Amino acid sequence: MSTIEESLRAISERVKSHSSTMATEEAVKTAVVLPFLRSLGYDVFDPSEVIPEFTADAVGKKGEKVDYAIKIDGDIRILIECKPISVALDKKHLDQLYRYFSVTNAKFAILTNGRTFNFYTDLEAPNKLDVRPFFVFDVTDFNAGIVNELRKFEKSTFDVSAILATAERLKYTSGVKQVIAKLIEDPSEEFVRIVAGDVYEGRMTATAREMLTGVVRSAFREVIMDTVKSRLSSALADTQEVIEKIDDPVSDEPDIVTTDEEREGYMIVKAIVRDTISPKRVIMRDQKSYCGILIDNNNRKPLSRLWFNRSVKYIGLFDGESEERIIIDSLDQIYEHSDRLRATAAKYVNGA
Image (cartoon, rainbow, N blue to C red; front, side, top):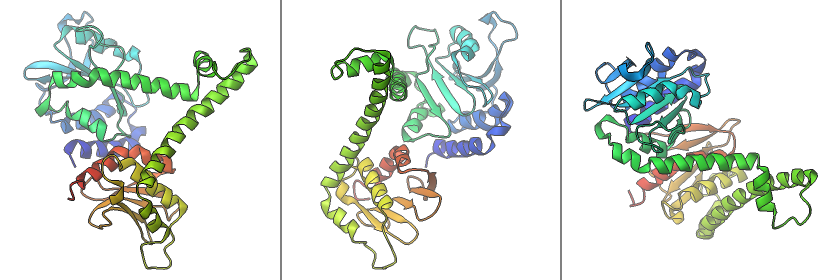
């Protein structure tokens, strides 16, 4: 496991357990921001590299400071502004970063409340900080994709061009996902008119619009679920012989019962990794205390474990040096760990 991942997990647990004690900017800096910068390879004890309370003469507002400035190869390249964890980050908090960005050689700015990190640059206009971040992540809910993006900010590999190469795609992908998520939960009147226009022939009265809004919301969710089910069916169609093995427990112990929930969890995991490794290699082996999902039916190649035989359910992940158990409230939450499951499967692709 990389240093970044280890640090993020430690920070994540700290935020989850002690967020109530991070009511000030200073607490956020000490408990989250400095450990985060250290994980990226910066010397937080060197004030010439990680400059606290950074000021620039040309700003024009005396006494105004940015919490940290990161200097790389002699130039200020990253500015960081911290807020208490209870503060919801908004563009109004960008004022100081906005002014300092234009009078330094900084290419990136980070606004954080200790839980959410917003990364900004100047995609819209040179040397003018964008209002919308190009990269956002929640330290309590990160995945392999986020870690890969953060690695670009490591001191040893910091490359402005490499970061900017994907920044625009990240920015607009994030924006589109937010719009889609909002449309699913609260379809706009215009969206309802567009999607219902070809199927509803009546007059668009207030009553009809209210009815169709509910229909569109339900249909949107069903389309997503149908897509997921189709993916699962495709994965299973390739491995009918494995399904038959599931119906007959692998273990000879008669008191082991494979539940429907375990079967469905197994199918979800297999669907997630099917583009990484052949589904035929993904086998379920139920045990008394957990349901194991193995590659090649080999105990030395664990992909995941489903700890469902208890009141609190866990999924076991193996992308680190040992199993990590994570609480899940529903089977849908397995999808939140897709990147980690694919990373584990990738280790076994070549028969390792």
